Image 1 (cartoon, rainbow, N blue to C red):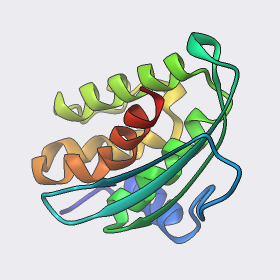
Image 2 (spheres, rainbow, N blue to C red):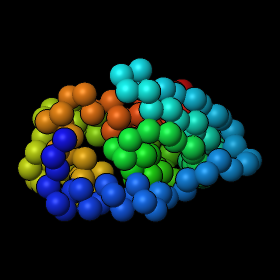
Image 3 (cartoon, helix red, strand yellow):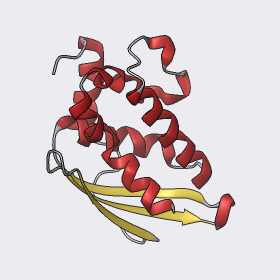
Length: 145
């Protein structure tokens, strides 16, 4: 898979120095998720403050085994969702999944609030890798449900 140098640099930076990596306690929900396509595996722990629609993701920790795309994507996700309400985090999943599946490639198609997640926009041209980029997001949605 070929990515632009700029996007590759962002992904590799998160892969080499992942944000919030390592399983921590205490946590409210733990989810294990596997990408059946490639075998990437993730254990995700989420801590919440509050309940229902007002619940805020106060911490997120994880252990992921897989390709650089899946590992970097979980790192980016962790940075985006901590401090957001559960519905806001779920809305980010929906937005990123739609952008990835919509074959978006230009920078204008990725809103600025998605920050480093924009580095994954070129993954949309490689359908087999979309599940890698969404591994953490899918686990998060399961954890929040």
